[in-house]
Amino acid sequence: MEATRRRQHLGAAGGPGAQLGASFLQARYIPFFLILFMYFSGCFTASKAESLMPGPALLLVAPSGLYYWYLVTEGQIFILFIFTFFAMLALVLHQKRKRLFLDSNGLFLFSSFALTLLLVALWVAWLWNDPVLRKKYPGVIYVPEPWAFYTLHVSSRH
Image 1 (cartoon, helix red, strand yellow):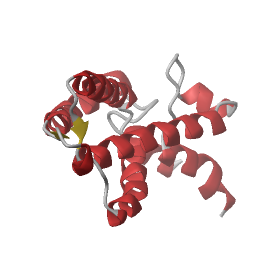
Image 2 (tube, helix red, strand yellow):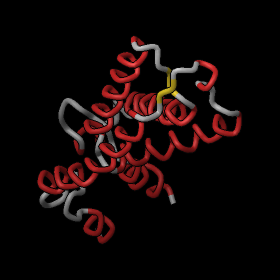
Image 3 (tube, rainbow, N blue to C red):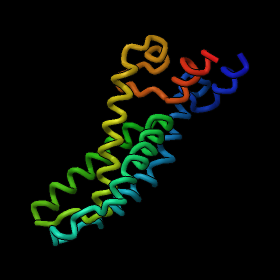
């Protein structure tokens, strides 16, 4: 009972003031994603040879994608993330017409976001039929928080 009460803070799904808190939490991330997009818009080069990601950077795509997955799911900012991802995709397609290619930094960020989208899709598909989480996160866009999954399914086993 005490753990449930502690979890229901302002902005927690299902907690008091969930609507106000959720929109406030999403608004806090707007500058973050705006800065990421601005940075990404400068990550283009005219040379196809400069459009390769070094090997060590490939190893870091997985932890980066996992970090963004946690940020998107726990922060409940999927809408903001998906808009940013599609804006990045549109920019890549637009720049490709100008014969500009992503440099290694842009490839890293875009690959991290693509991996994040894949991880979120797998997360949602895995928990799609969970009746308790479905009730806790109603609506068209269903992205359950990892913490809610942990408290419901993992911590109850201990």
